[in-house]
Length: 297
Image 1: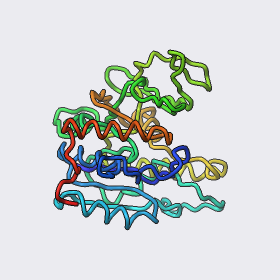
Image 2 (image 1 turned 120 degrees about the horizontal axis):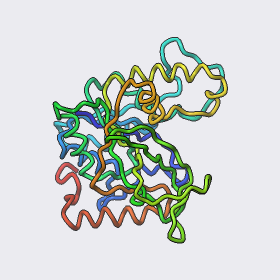
Image 3 (image 1 turned 90 degrees about the vertical axis):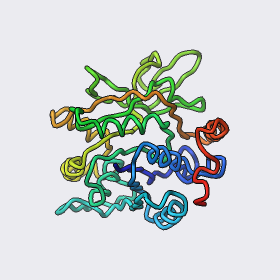
Image 4 (image 1 turned 180 degrees about the vertical axis):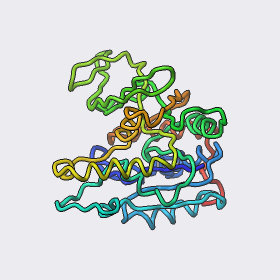
């Protein structure tokens, strides 16, 4: 089983590259805890998508730490990497988005895989649920999403963007993006629309269980995207949009796996202290060893 981590973000609200911030008790990156939990669940291949300037650093950093029996591929997301026959005639600096980042790994993954953000903490239970889903011979859905309750994913330091899930019979119907959800004065509200939430809604935090067929679906979707001269100026191709497109076209079903574990992220600089405290607490409780990778340092 393969873990695919998206680590090409630029951390505009956080103020620096949060995927390389040493938040663990021994300066471990947040992604290292995801890798540790994935290995614990039986994953044996790690693929990381990052910016070209960070490939060598991340390769060296992780090769010195993770177990030697774990295969590691660190790849760069390149603007010029396009589907065959595609070309763009406009100047663009912004990355193509998370779906394009996943598509970057198409030649390195040929079995079911999990994809998630490198700068979020998902909890060990999420990886074990994903592994059980992949290994279960009676699984009827080819795809899955690990979901979290909205109230458990909010930041005390500002508004957050969350994908509110619509679910029927345990399957995902759609994900509605709400860009400015905040908790204040005892209420949870989307500042853009004014919609209020109970906090018990299931949200997507970009933890997906996927099949290799996704790569060809992304390529088709991306090729169509590139034909729109307005979209290619500044828009991005997001992985949830591609998956939702497949659901709408009845090309797949997506099982929702409610997580019983903890999630946290570092959207804002002030979220850092909370993340550091949470990781330290789990280490003190011996949920994680210290240092995380023991004698491999």
